[in-house]
Each structure stands twice: as C-alpha cells, then as structure tokens.
Amino acid sequence: MAEEAPGPLIWTLPEPPGRPTTSLSRAGILRAALTIADAEGAPALTMRRVAAAVGASTPMSLYRYVGSKDGLVDLMIDAVYGEIPLPDEPAAHWRSGLESLARDTWAVLLRHLWFGELVHTRPPLGPNALRYFDFRFAMLETLGRTADELSLITGAVDGHLFGAALQLAHERRMRMRVGLHTDDQLAAAARPFVEPILAEGNYPAFARWFQGRTGAGPAEPVEWTLACILDGLTIRLGLPE
Image (cartoon, rainbow, N blue to C red):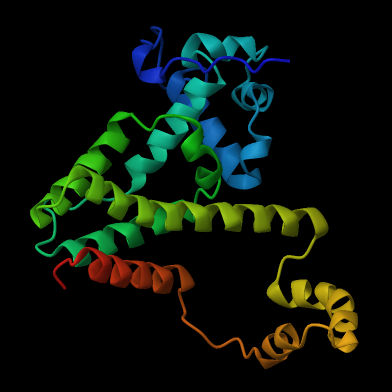
C-alpha cells in the first residue's frame, strides 16, 4: 500500500475560530499530544489517543484544528524549540555560545525524548524553530565561514543531541516494557546472558572491557561528547579557540 502523502505545514493552515482556552482547540490538542508523548513516547501518539484526551467524540474532530497528524507533529516540534531559552544577544565567542545553547537544548530534550524520533519527519519551519536557527546562525556568522561549513557545525551538534535523545527514548521504552527501572535491575537481568559468553573465552577483549568497568566517567556523558565534537571541529576547520 502506498504511503499517504505528507500533509501541508500547519503554519499554512489558519486556525479555525473558537475559544483557545477550551480543550478542543489547537492549543488544547497540542497540550494533550505533548502529555501523551512525554509519558509514553512517539509510538503512543495517535489521533485516537489525543481525541480521547481532549474529550473529542471522534479523531476526525481534530482534523479541523490541525489538518492531519503531520500538522500536530509540526506543532509539537515547534513547541519544543520554543522551550529552549535564547539569550538576548549571542555570546562573544562562538564555542562558548554554541556549547551553552547545546546544553540548554539538551535539558529541554530530556523532557521530550520523543523529539529525537519525530524531528526529522517534518520540516522544522515553525516560528520557534526559525528563531532558534536564526539566533544560532547569527552567532556563528562571526566565524566568516561559508553556509555549507556552518551546516556542518550545526549538523554535528544536532546529530549528537538528537541521536542521544533517540537512544534514551528507545532505552526508556525497553525498560518500561520489561519492568527494569534502575541500572542495577538492568545489570542483574543481563548477567545470565553475559556470563556464559565471558566463560566461553571466545571474545577476550570484550571480556576484559566488561570486567574492567568501574562506572567511573564523566557525570554528563552527553556534554563530554559535545566537548569532543567541538574540539574536533575547532581543529578540522581551523576555528578560533
């Protein structure tokens, strides 16, 4: 069966008249969708679930307000960008500014891990996303680099943050499915599978790594990797330190 053609961007569809304080409004539908996705992840986000949450008689009732599920995803993606705080002025130094913005972005993504699953399914062209991109490019323009080089810089940072969110989203879903809510529970569940592999002796380097782990490491692995990426970009592109 052929896939349904993507719907138009929500920003091209005027919101129907109504009282925005009611649940059956664009804002009310968005709030319900965010609540569902935050709690259960992207797979739980269906028009039927959202309709039930806002008290709509049928999922079709929502289409008058958001056009399609694509339109709802547009709103959700832009809402997340809108939560990321932007300074009044870009930082004087490109790296400190980009690092600070990335940390603030990650703090928001931790509240919305589904973002990593949905961000690339729709063009992020809402007003909040565009303000975010405009601020970031204005900050990096001082480097005097081409648009393609700026795309490489921002793409590296976004790929890291979105990928980390995606990984955590899938891990959280697995933990919820099997009831392993703590790291100790996960380690105990994995032990019966790992110990026979170690005992076989066929993978000595893996065994040395597994048995040599102490749990020591950076308190914030995502920030540690971000710093490594920025170190590499600085050297690779010859950027000012």
